[in-house]
Length: 309
Image 1 (cartoon, helix red, strand yellow):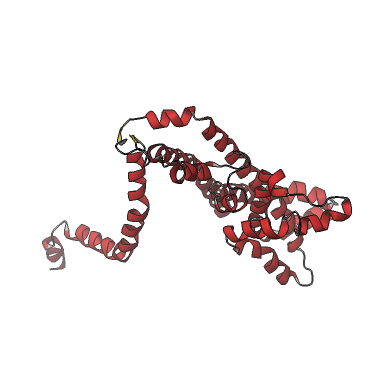
Image 2 (tube, rainbow, N blue to C red):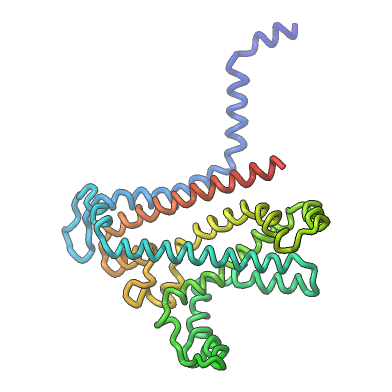
């Protein structure tokens, strides 16, 4: 009787039941998914549409289809190439310096010292400050030529009254970004150090390896995936820097601190050229997508190596 009853059940019932079960599980996530699509993908599709149009808000009736003309103008635009170069220097420079400092701080915090928890909290605090607040803090409190703390500290060495933001704009902005992102790198490196097997280090010490040699031959290879992860994730976030530039330098002097996001802002809200601004936005998205793809592959490789140990 049981075999007859099983044969009596339609063949597609089990498959349909599994499909309904799958939709029942996905159902609670659908509102969030729809909201994400509406908020992110619909504006991007509109941006892609406007990138093929010539439309300047200051010229009524200028809206017309130009195809790839805006993208050709972007490629020929010398200011775009300058902004791209500034973006590369600002992103890679800040990420690499923050990674080096974060690694050094992680090595210090890995040691058992008095007040280590308090020191960790203090070192993490810059990462929790809003970007606009960080830019305003450094411009008015740290780099001010009259009342700035940097001039006060350097005064015994003959440095005083230096307007760092005006004389060294790119270095000033990069300093703020390094200050903000060093705690992020420190946390990643600290996680890598805490995951390192202690028996390998103890074996190196027993074999007579000096601390620097043990770090170079044992710790550094272990931290390499974490360094790649921190560098790439930091680059993804730093490439979109806008607040610090707007607060501290307004993209100047000239175009010395104008990166791609700020150049996009200038073309949109100062030049009112919607068509070329949209093409710039699409180009920025493509560049960011390339960086994110590399970052995701690095994360996948890191997890694969961790599971294989």
